[in-house]
Amino acid sequence: MTDAPDLYNSIDRYIDELFAVEDEHLKAALKACRSAGLPEIQVSPGQGKLIYLLAKIVGARRILELGTLGGYSTIWLARALPADGRLVTLESETKHAEVARANLTRAGLIDRVQIVIGPALQTLPQVVDGAEPFDLVFIDADKVNYPSYFAYIMRCVRPGALILADNVIRKGKVLAPRDNDPSSGATRAFNAMIAADQRLEAIILQQVGVKGHDGLAIARVK
Ligand code: SAH
Ligand code: DHB
Ligand code: MG
Image (cartoon, helix red, strand yellow):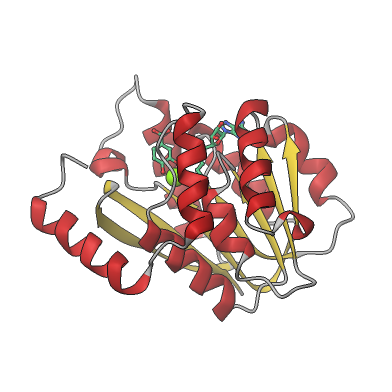
């Protein structure tokens, strides 16, 4: 990414080469995303490894993801599940979901993944109501709806669960969101919500490197 100093990018690549080496399925997934013309906004390898590790640390058996894109982050997360684990991922774009389905099939993970097509606010009720609680939720869909997603997600997480949210710093735009940038305003509101919520203990991890300057919110349900 051009806005991060070269050293940050070099260090990010150094870390990825040590700790987040992509195997053939992750590489093939990225290639398929590119061929299909999907935006290249998936998590970096190191960010994928981080959410994978967090899922393992929390012993996640049930994961909910908002924003599938081509399934790159989905592969990282699904690999953290035990064989009988389950991941539900929500995606509004049929084309993205189709690319993701092919990628997850090739990676041998489709048996434990359910892709639900439609705007997440519309599909969340059917996914969440009456379902077993989730152990980890990764929010990475449209940023304007982060506050609404958060309110909904609090209904379907167990004590000890992790709620992760990508892109909560946005190159620092959260410090002073402009009126013409509703995403940054909503992200700022989301950050304030999780900071103030007495049901959570949370932090934001500032991230720099190959995805520019951004942040990952990490919240644990008490
Ligand atoms: N998690 C992915 C990247 C997701 S990019 C990865 O790291 O590999 C954000 C995705 O959210 C896009 O595919 C976009 O189509 C989807 N999206 C946007 N608005 C949405 C909505 N209202 N409901 C569900 N998905 C949405
Ligand atoms: C965008 C979305 C993302 O989830 C991300 O990680 C980076 C960029 C975007 O919509 O531009
Ligand atoms: Mg993201």
